[in-house]
Image 1 (cartoon, rainbow, N blue to C red):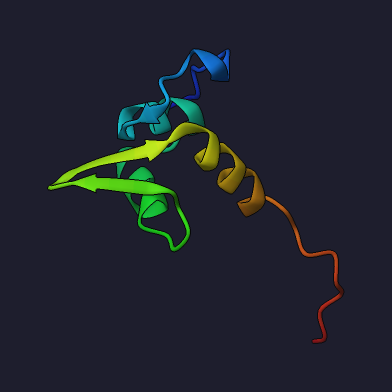
Image 2: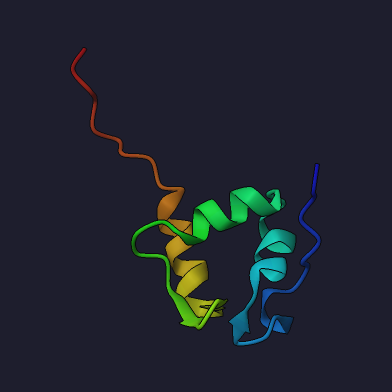
Length: 74
């Protein structure tokens, strides 16, 4: 299982590739591509190449982790 290896987020380039995201999140590559396909993820496509804006991606990723505190009806 991959593990996150990034220590300082600001040492990352302004535009990330899938390998950067994998290092950052510790996800497998198929899971990284699933994550990047989600609506709202700040990706840029150059033909088949995918790049991700670093700062918007980090903000977006943080938003994905927030839990709705509203109680759910069962």
